[in-house]
Image (cartoon, rainbow over all chains, first blue to last red; front, side, top):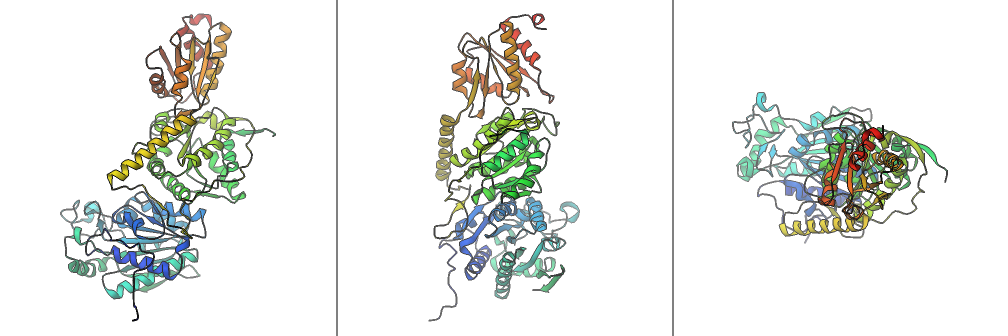
Length: 253
Length: 355
């Protein structure tokens, strides 16, 4: 019998702690598959952040460091500068990366640190129970924006890819989603390209639109529809590759 | 070896390089910026890494990453910057990552001033950050010790897998003195626990999250045992003329040298004074001080703060003898004659006799 797929060897054989319908599991799997395919395990160091994905170090069969809230890009910088031949990735949520860790991600990107950032955007703080994040959509309700986010009160959602694309440091930026099988495959490709970009000594970041059925108070199926209908208009799927002359080559995904 | 005229900050930086420091991450702040300016040129010369971070927070987290990957790594700052680093220091202590953290103190609180001060004693000897950890704190009294204690700090950091503080002040950092630099270290200790990529072994994980309360309890008990071991083995101090002293002056850092001058002046007057200088502020040399201070003696604590080490001294002597205090909180040290005045007063001599 020909096997089409099996568990990646770089994922530890244990149950995820993530909620039913959450797509962290898919994203973990894609990262593990790509590192396995590129045969990078023996020189990869992963950085787990704070938030739902804090336990990422439990799942990847790789050397891992857990970082303080928002500081993963600085931790990654310390490792990469000391071990320039290593492959370093951070795995961060939107509260971690776009709020408390905004300075760290901007400056790591501006320096062009050769690291790969896996940025999971589910529009709110998952682990602490669904509070407002910088990525929360206008009118979206959260436990700390119970009337729905209003621009005049809580400000506008932050679009990380577009923000980072104003810098000359990054070599590869992409926003993908994992709400359909086709998008899962595109995300896998983007993650692979982001690691290849690191091997080319570039800063690379993949923003992946994810689901949070528990805090969105939707079923897993409704959550997938919510990504499609609510998130995609605000967060368009796009790939930006820096060309030799410094301009961005833009592809809609 | 030939002695060189070096500023304290530069002596510290060169000693770090000789101790095998191969990574430095920092952010400018007076009065320690010479450390990073020196290393910006020096570390690349020896194949090391220098990076000016975007903030003290980023700097200490770069230290955390590099320390986890097995580097001999250092950062330096002054009070306001150490406050920002507090979060990272707690993580470094929790994950038992070796590193050296230098605080060249300035006067506070808040922005305070850039003058010399010892106002960060409590911050360094208790915990800068959350969770109740301890770090060894070494207090150099001059440029020579800036070099020697930095060299020692790296050894202790690796030996005990802990952040180690150098608690200096602007006087020690800025004063130029003749310094004999330590030799270059030849071999660095192996770090099999470091995250370097899991070639031919099980994965290494550096983490301070323990959701199981038994696991957390065990982890914290193990940390406490380590702190006890450090206290037993690494407590350091210096005492002069204490054997027959009726008044023992306790001071640390550069201030101990001013206090020493006062002690010598007192001896010239016929007052039997002595000097006790803690070199490690944590662990505090409480037992040694208790031994030096017998029941017929008095103690004078002199600091450039409102009375921070004073608390440790009072705990050590446990109300057995009178403890006087002379503190300066404006960013300038007391002069020797001012200290002498207090020694004389405690000895029952009249101030007029010494002026």
